[in-house]
Amino acid sequence: MTCKNCIYWTEDDSNEYKYNRGNCNNKKFIYAEDLYDISTQVRKTPDEDTLVYGDYEGYPAYFTTGPEFSCIHFKKEGDENEVQIV
Ligand code: SF4
Image (cartoon, rainbow, N blue to C red; front, side, top):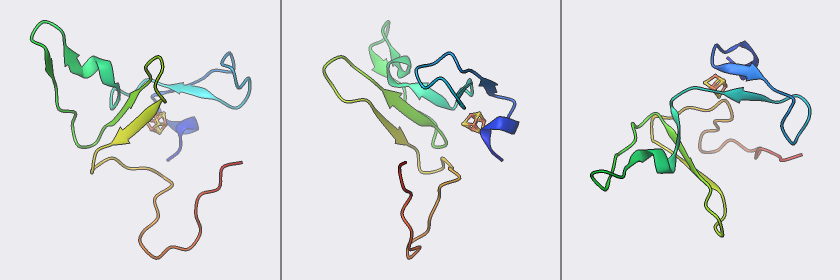
């Protein structure tokens, strides 16, 4: 259950990393600004199984996850090894 076998994934080496990358077009990944309805000026509450990301000029990029979001890097309390960034 990884991206390379997922229907939402398209291999794309045109990005800045140039290798071994792809794009996910699953609607469960939401740009924070897309939650904001400018006509009503109301920010929608994202579903609990979504990831919301934001990147605004002058601010650090971020993402948040809902409590029902899932990730292959899951570790439960007491697992010893941290995920290492290479
Ligand atoms: S991140 Fe996107 S492409 Fe990768 S498994 Fe999840 S839905 Fe599929």
